[in-house]
Image (cartoon, rainbow over all chains, first blue to last red):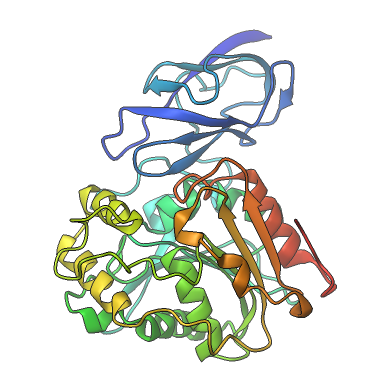
Amino acid sequence: MAEQTFALPDLGEGLVEATVLEWLVRPGERVERNQPLVELETTKSAVEIPSPCSGTVVRLHASEEETLRVGAALVTFEVDSAAGIVGTVPGGERPTRRVRLRPPAE
Amino acid sequence: MSADMYQTLPGPVPLRYARLGPSHASRPPVVLLHGFGSDFESGWVRTGWVRALEEAGGEVVGLDLRGHGGSARPHTPDAYLPEVLAGDVARLLDALGVGRADVVGYSMGARLGWEFAARFPGRARRVVLGGFGPSDPFADVDPASPGSGEAPFDRVFRAAVAAPGADPVALTACVRGQMSRPFSPDPAPVGVRLLLVAGERDALAEGMEALAAPGRGDAVVRIPRRDHLTAVSAQAFKRAVRDFLSAESPSFRTS
């Protein structure tokens, strides 16, 4: 078991910050990888961020309606496995749900 | 969603689409129709909808409407008439061999869902209209210069043309095409159940309750503290849609 902090990922489209609309988990709660973690609002749209790992939520680093810069601490987990979680959102879990936060370049 | 998830529907106006999840004999696929200035990725993937619908075990068809995302971008208003967009949806379902589908549309995509259900009887089973009401969103918009005013849609337009990769000429043509056919609740789609959902602070969905016919099993959901932009990702919206699409009995209600 180890604590890992997950930062606000790059949301693409030149967005540098986002505001917390609603937390979907609470400290002490067990979460599964890819479970919805938080809804954010950017100047352009709403975004749902999935959990990058399975584990237990230790700390939420922003309150609702608070604005965060990309790269700022978002949530700290006590994780089951440390595989590839710091500051990134996982790219491909299952072939049917590859979710990428940056849209294709036009 | 990675780029190779997408396929192209060929034709005079090629359209980019994605078909995801397992198909079922017993349950129609869900067609997701995004709003003005958005695309499938921004409207439905980044907001967690595809994740939620796949978890519920459903098949999803996502389309970039013409003028948007990875689809072709005609520059004439006639190319964006509501009936033309509805024809795109029918053409895609034909190509996929889908006879009947559930439709979830947001904002302009909701208008399109209504149009599709009204023009192609029997092709839509249940229709979700999100962020949409019977009042004219273009009432105070200058067709010569959309985005120049302070109507709620002017703000939507400005955000849309400012997005990377947007085509302002195509988006302006789209507005003019949509404006030339003001929405009328009559005739309503026949043989279809409707769910109306919007943020309680969504000015563009004003009066949406009037579009619901409770006797037909329609339902209405208002999402607390959300507006036109932020209602899209709301868990309450996703739950309402999952319940609505999976309910067997026409007595389904929600508050």
